[in-house]
Length: 301
Image 1 (spheres, helix red, strand yellow):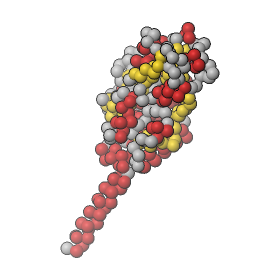
Image 2: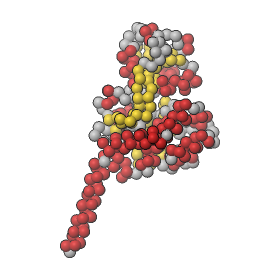
Image 3: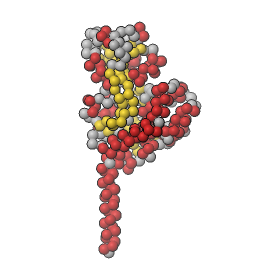
Image 4: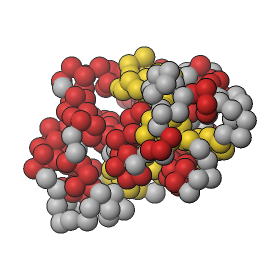
């Protein structure tokens, strides 16, 4: 009886120890237990995160989300929300992590814990119609000038700092800011240099160059809730490893430097290019992408 009691006690202690270990791992432990990770994203900014011609999620950061799920060996539930809802969604535990095109700022760092590893470097620019491309910042920073920004983005802070005399108009997503500029409801739209190529092709807008093109420079990182140390450590490790392996460079070449993604995702077709197929294979995300068949391990809410 003593032997049985000791064995039972040992089993209980091992179970309790394992449960305590998962609890210590915070969100990472919860993800592994649930065999699913929930990530919020704002699917309104190609080529970073957007809905393709078939209504599926696509983009640079969406592929990163898939890679995180694949490395953890769990299902991915992607939730589409407006940008301003991302940080509240993380803090209210509706999103396990944030892994999107989010700039690291002092204001955000007071709410969430950014990874020390970053995945992109860029900056805010002012976009105008072609006939105004020779304007300067000084001309834009005048009473009567109207500037469109997407709510909750780094562009809001840049507008307040560098264009305090202009009228600031806030919109829920990127497309609304572009439409406001196109229909002359505003004189300029502040956004990221990273979207300029796509916006130029679709709308013909140009970036102001005087006194310089970048209004403010920034880097993009992932984020977790304060105190979520194990998850933070895993994401830092993930970013460091995909830099070492060349996978992050491969993503950059496809989504930023090349143009094949436009044919693959902005046009309705029966399949994707060999370039995309090779990238999916290299990243190990075939189970999470609709172009490889049914995305059996990913859902979009």
